Length: 450
Image (cartoon, rainbow, N blue to C red):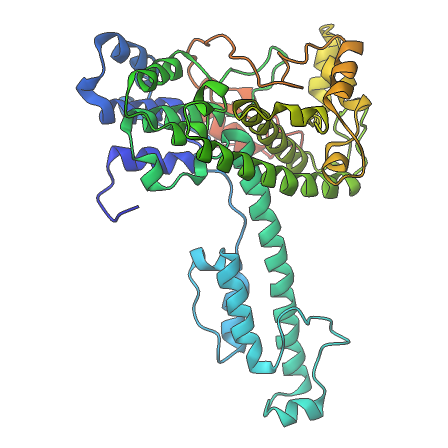
């Protein structure tokens, strides 16, 4: 992005990798489109923009407006600067950049003759004579201290890479490829940019603690903005396709772009499948119920499962767009079910909600990562048969075909949530969150001054 003053369109682009309230995004869209909106369009947009924090006297939200980022190696870099002459300052951004961190470790490690990746304390340390030959004038204790630090930094780097991948999959599951749009791709058409930004904000809404179903992302405001794209001869369908995986969108792309997206999504399916296998193998999930048990890493699993299902939806829709759907007759890995919290499962049972039939289909089909690795077979025929046995519509549920367009939802103000529970006042919500309410953990003490 060019170094310019922060315009409303720049703010919309920044929101793609954040978690802005749809109301804030709608207010920024009003600033971008201005008098180009018709009276009816402005009235629709105002349903959301009217609730933006800018319009409130004490505008405040208790919810974080960014996705959590992994902790970088800033603390380890500071320690390295105390021990190594070669160590130089590394800003927070670079200390969270795996490539920069690896280069830093290699550079600093050369001071004690340590090769990157050779971190076994018994096998890879230099002997006293080897250190002397290289002119390393350190005591045994001083050398060991530095070697251990570099080994810990390498281990921390591996953790950072994994956590960044998990965050990337979280964004992927929530908003598709929106966060990967470059400034040039995003800003090519303002109508398309406004739709992409608003629909992304709707897709990344937090889940509510309910058995009534979550809000649908495609609401009346998204529909109005999408209609503007449909009418515009300059619509940027490449940008729209990054966040809205519909055949009607993909069909408006040149075949080369649709083919490029198909390749991207299939590569992502392979990457996501690897992490799903890793988490599944390291855990003891109850596959029959998918109810969370003690020791389950539900955060990682649900984010990665969401990424899998999003990538799968896009891949299937693109196959149909390109006339390649016959491929699904030979290989069609199934959807991945998320873990459900025990209290939500109890609530469903308490109100008499029947078990999700999709869970039965999931249990009957081979695990998706086994299919991707070629260790198991799963075809469209197998998926259709499983859906038929358990009363699941394979088309409406997205098991075998692109998901159909659902009804347009009415806009609903974004609730203030504390672990999924709606709290009317954002200041009260922030207070309850700090005390640990609704977290499932012991609550903190309330001071007498409150």
